[in-house]
Image 1 (spheres, one colour):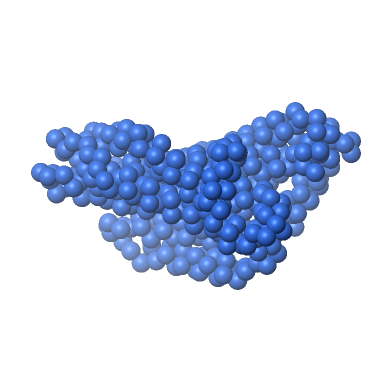
Image 2 (cartoon, one colour):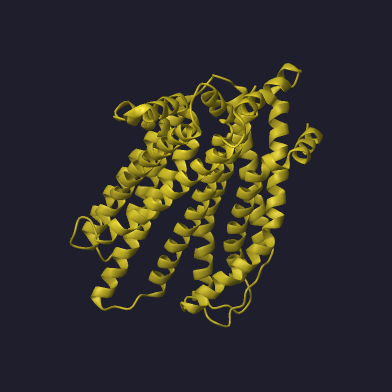
Length: 436
């Protein structure tokens, strides 16, 4: 099966391009921040600089690991689902589920390894730039030089390969087990995340404005709430569609299509919810904290600067990965519907009408993801603002929320409509023949 996997990658490299891009970006991010561990371990470095570098490597490295897994998992899930007919044919030819799993995992590991190797050069450049940022902000002493040692490539490759193998195994199991689903574990994890997240956000009221860890409970509460909503995204989308008054032929058809593909749209809603919640909550709380320090006339400490740098860096990483996840998922999902679009055109629909349906679907997905992401963000922002300041909702919230919503809408609508327009260039008869 390993030889078959390698042959599959060589024969169809375009199919694995999205996985390669996710693995490349993930490995580059992890290696960039793990190089701070190598830099902190060199001889003669002062304790304050070493602590700053290790904190950046551990905190952002942890976020990077989760994002790599989510990005690779979303890409592989869509790719494996599109190969369901091929996998079913192999099963009918005598292949066992274990053999299919080893084939798909072998493909994913080979692509992830290639992406990890390609990421070494950009990670070295990124590490130097990151160290320069720490130098300019005074968080790391100027004499400290950049070191790209064994920790960075080993950590980046290990995280990327493990994420690719685990995501591929989960994706192929979903396809090979057919209609047999186990939603109980997913619901349990979702409700547990919601409960713990709500408790974490509520615990903020037990702290004082002078506590150094004041931002941690609401931030982690917002993250866990967004994870809970993301796990429940199929049920949440179904509930929204049942209560949404949408008129017109395009709206009716869009709602019907979304209802038929609720389970498959989780790969799109998950990054939307996580991005809206984490970025809005983190940037708003950081703006409130910076305003409070500025109004008090105090100078930011090294720890405060470290926290601000980490917050902005985490949001930047999340923004990059959410764009990759959304573009990959939307591109693959829209391309897969070429036969459906062809049948609609043969039934009398114009290309403009098909694009209208796709646009309405994208708008509904964006609204659903942004709504539940905003709820999770507010659950963290409001307690923090009440304790740290004298208002319930800070002035910075609206501007941050509008910016994050604009990014989500631009990526979702742009990718969906752009891909659909490209698919519609194929004649309707040809599109139906390819899908048959």
